[in-house]
Length: 181
Image (cartoon, rainbow, N blue to C red; front, side, top):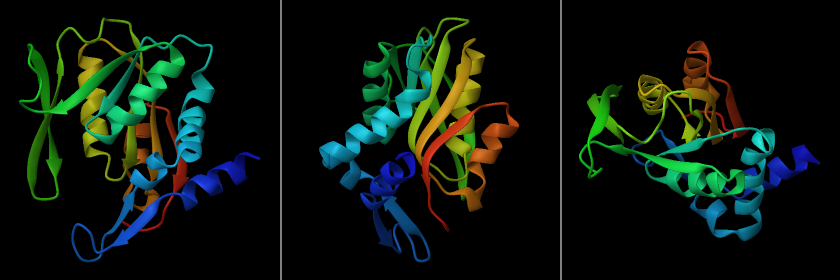
């Protein structure tokens, strides 16, 4: 049953070749999100391992992580914490830089978003290189969070991001894999 459910979810993801540049296949989850059954299945599958346990906060990475993370937080009766690109949060923040293919970027979180000892799940739509997710884990830990898991709808295992998180001691949960970039 679980394999069939994830196969149906995978079928709901649109693949767009040569976007944002030649040779890349963009995995678009907007089609999954617009289908009520697929959206519900994805959220339920992300929530299932943690239902009934103590999760204080769900942290979502901008922007699709907000959609998924908000739904996961609701189902777990947890708070939701946005992790945003630098300059987007109105209160005092802590930030970290991370490497991109050509240059760097920064993400930030409100300094009071996490209490020391909070059990947190990190959520985003896709794990590729793991740069943003690794930076998010570091921010959460800097604020004293126990990162229980990092959850993604899609993993691109050839790129190695999920393994980067595992190397940091983070449990990684994904619902499907796609080959390539």
